[in-house]
Amino acid sequence: MTTKTALPESRKHMFTILSVDTDISVHMTHSKEWLKFGVSTFRVDTMGEAISQLMSGRKYYFVFINEDSVLNFAAQLEIMRDVTNIPIFIFSNSYTLKKKITYIELGADMYDHFAEYAADDVLDALEELKLHDRWAKQPHEKIPIFIQGDVILSKLRHTVFVRDIEVTLTRQEFEILSYFLANSGILLYSIQIIESVWGCTNEEVSPEVLRNAVKRLREKLKVMPDSPEYIETIRDVGYRFLSGCCK
Image 1 (cartoon, rainbow, N blue to C red):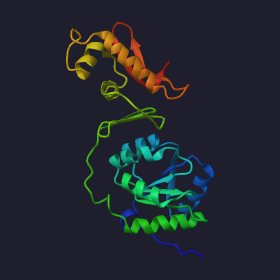
Image 2 (cartoon, helix red, strand yellow):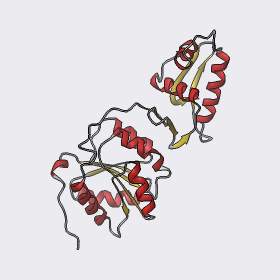
Image 3 (cartoon, rainbow, N blue to C red):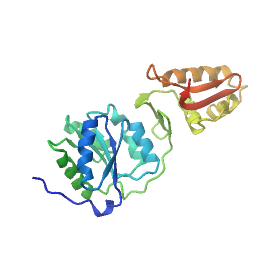
Image 4 (cartoon, one colour):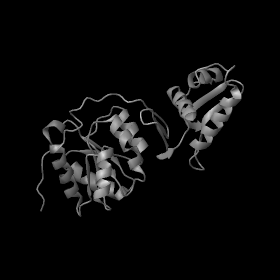
């Protein structure tokens, strides 16, 4: 029989865990155990959704990631760490020491086996929280990260994810997308984009060069057949980024 442990004093004002988990049964089982400590669980399916939640300013107790159900989560661990200083805990049925070293280096605070009983996972996390102040004591600087719908872009790490799939862009494509995301929903004239990305006028860089670059960018953002068209073309005028609602 396990012995309950109390919440750490410094964290008693936080009552919600952010869970990244597509396995509903695992989520429900652990949620019931956390409720015994007065802690609720907010579940999302993807790392992109989790990062968006953390950037929203909502307070979370810590981040829980189910490695078994969230594919390619490690690719965005560093971005998650860039936006939060709360603990990030990862549990798995396929634990290895090599993966633990990798995840800790990427910013996670704990990586462990799922226990036979969910109650033991909860107690494990509570004990870890008592020892854990690594990120909480560090000043947290705001990192330039853009999230619009399914698209997440980190300027610091020069990375782009669409539906949690990493997309490789050229420097110009990355700068164009950065400009679109910074001005999401706004009609951008071609000359504005050229001046921002190339630093010159359309006399030096033709609208045709921009059209070709946007065409390549649009193709790369379509990571799945059902992916929406994120970039709307306004004929003879410019472009607008619509967070995936443009058909």
